[in-house]
Amino acid sequence: MTAGVATAHLDDVPTLPFGTDAEPDWKPLRHHLGVGAFGVNAWVAPKEGDPAVERHDEAPAEGDGPGHEELYVVMRGAARFTVDGQDIDAPAGTLVFVSDPALRREATATADDTVVLAIGAARGVVFEPSDWEEGWLRRLGGT
Image 1 (tube, one colour):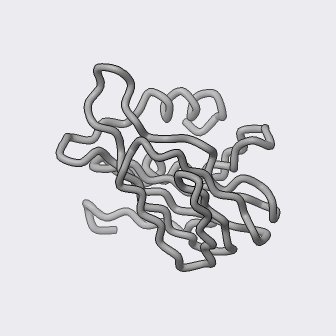
Image 2 (tube, one colour):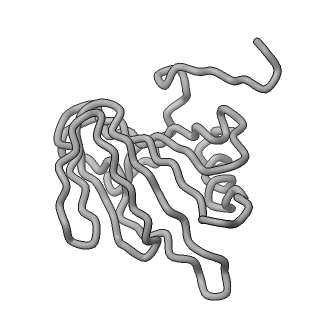
């Protein structure tokens, strides 16, 4: 393989379960591929009705820089996103871009084997991997 290029099939990236019904399973793509410029993960909802994106916002903590913008791509299956109270039906191939970090967002699978790709970073600042990511990788055995 040429230096500076990494490839993987989505199904070959280990899936790390959080062990709770409140969160989707996690494919830590940024870590797996060595991406350093932005955050990227895949979220897996095995069954219809499972969470495909956990309920959250990307607003920064007091004193931190700007929050993250996020682009979600429904890779397979289908999901219903709720962003700031608005429902968005999203079959495979749908793009949902949330530019305002303060907006609450979540998604629920509306089909079995739903996978949602999430790509995010703060506009105009250098990306730094979060402590959240490293902590969960250690806890879930992904490192």
